[in-house]
Each structure stands twice: as structure tokens, then as C-alpha cells.
Amino acid sequence: MPPPTTTRARCCGTTTPPSCGATSRSTCAGEIAKRAGLTQKAAKEQSRVSFGKVTEYQKRGAVHFHAMICFDGPDDPPPVWATLDLLTDSIHAAAARVTVDVPAAGD
Image (cartoon, rainbow, N blue to C red):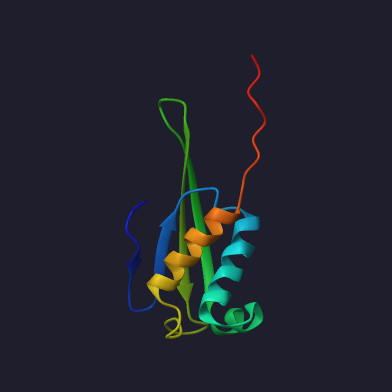
């Protein structure tokens, strides 16, 4: 996993699936709120979590995913509790809880 980055106006981390679907978005938001000691509603009012993802089909036939997850404040930089460590821990916790069921390949 590439190292997370931070700037004045945003705190971003990167990850790979399974933590980049709608279920994991909700799971990640819950993990963020829990680690910040807030309700999900309060965390949502104080910050905005943005998700971007890219899927690429590699030459060797594998599908490869990238996801970028960022904290932003409602109008300015994220609140002081929205740290890179909190985001990274939340991403890892959400990824560990989310699963993707894939049907068995046929012959």
C-alpha cells in the first residue's frame, strides 16, 4: 500500500479493495466516528470524507483497484481530530470487516 499523504487542506490515505465499495464507505465512516469518539452524525457534520477509486485491467489479466479516501472540513481544513493516523486506522479496520463474495470460476 502506498504511504498516506497529508496537506494543509486535506488528509488522504490510499487502500485497495475490499475497502472501496458502498458497504465499506459506510463501514469506514463508522470506524472514523468511533475512533474520533463521535457519533456518525457528529462526524459527518464536522467533516467530509471523499472517496475516489480506479479499476485497471492489467496486461497479465488481473483486475487491480486503487482507492483514495480523503478528509476535508465542511469549508476549511479538516477538524483537529481528523488526523492521518485516525484515517489510516479507520481504513484498515474497515477493510478487515468488509468482504466481497466472488463466484467460483467455471471450467
